[in-house]
Every structure is written in structure tokens, then in C-alpha cells.
Image 1 (cartoon, rainbow, N blue to C red):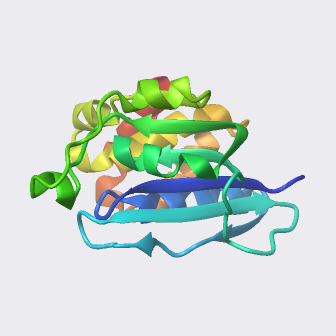
Image 2 (cartoon, rainbow, N blue to C red; image 1 turned 120 degrees about the horizontal axis):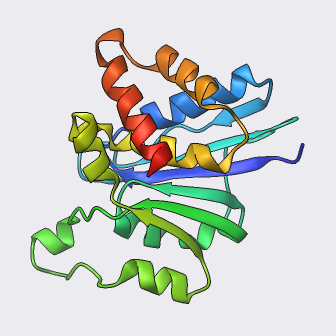
Length: 190
């Protein structure tokens, strides 16, 4: 199998590590060679972060170069737009429509860009945008956006929901398992 590349992008504190851990566990159980990068960027709450997940028969590097990502999973709208040059032709962006103001917007030095989904689509990109925050809150916690996004991404693969949920069970503490199951299921349906 040729190597597949997934970028998980967002803002520090949104749970990109758990999302990449879940994805990695699932892919390992399916027998793929997998490389997951460390989080690059400002991992403190509020800074831009990116994690690479690469899998296939044999993967030699965890790094995804510009034009190589099969999927970009974005926890925040501006972060999706920031990383579009990494998407390969025919790739897909799965994006939470939530907007988190970066520091230049907070300080008044810049304005949050308008119509980002429309601009990305106008550039010919395949953008699957939805309100993951609303679904996470419906599941029981705004912190479950990461698992809602993984549930939504799961529709792009041939793995069963049961396989995803088994990996989820290995990735989250037991006391948060039911919440995360609800978040995953809502994301998969949404």
C-alpha cells in the first residue's frame, strides 16, 4: 500500500495529541507501518500546532511535505486555511468551523479573515466543514471536539466503527470513555 498522510492541525490545548494517538492505535491494529510526529508549534494553549500521521506498508519518515497530505483534519477554521498548501491534489480537508482568535486578532493588530470555507472551496479544495464544537457539546463536553473530528474522519476509511471504538477504548481513561463514544458517534453521523 502506498503511504497515506494525515495532518492534524489546530490550536494548543484542543486535543490533537489524543486524536493522533487514537489514529495511531487503530492503524497499528490493522497492521500498518506508522509514523506519528511530535506536535510541532506552540503546544501551550492558544498556539498553532500540527501533528503528522503517516501509514502504509513501509514508512520511513514522520514528516509530510507540501503537496503530500491526503487529509488535513483541522480543529479550527483559520488553521485549516493556514495549512492548505500541504494538501495533495485530490486530498480532503475536514474542518471544524469554530473560530479561535489568534493573538494578532485579540490585540487588534489584525482581523479574523472572512469566508474561509468559501475561499478554500473557490481555490478548488475539497472542504468538509461542520460545527464539531456543537456536536462535542451535545456529547457532553466542548473538549471532545477532537473525538468528534476523528468520528467524522472515520467515514473516509474502510475501518469499522467497532475497530475505531476499540482504539478509542485504549486511548482514553475509563471515566471519559462514554463521553468520547458519544462524541465519536455524533461525529461519524455528522
